[in-house]
Image: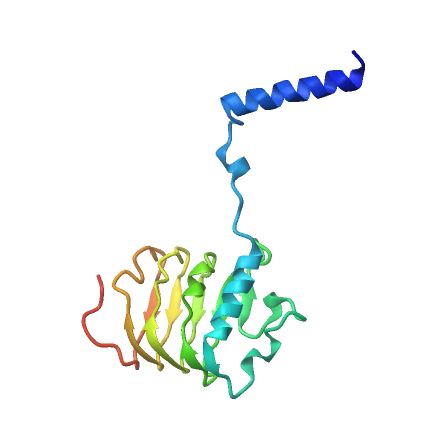
Length: 169
């Protein structure tokens, strides 16, 4: 047998053994959420906005890296992942897209002083969220388990909205 055939045979044996006994580390086959997910979540959020009179979203297009879009701050330790979204006081009207729940490395979300209405969507996938400011909007409700897994949440401001009923535990 030539050396090329020997190498190929050895590779087949190694692969077969890996399939039978596993590779020894589960994380080596885990596919991480890529930054494209963050960009799509931001674009979906933008699409749910019905009025942007000040042109805040003008930079939110494919010709500009989304980490440089107005109000977006990306992580330095996880390049391409959104760490903060700060869109305060822009007179935006519309709903808050549930896709913001896909920004799983988000630590701070500030959408205060706009005219966002409807129900606050479920954001319980944001386990790293430390600050959430939605004050001075027109939000009418929130899902009962909206903050269920937000165990890192230190700051929450829902004041000056149209919320009714009891606050979930």
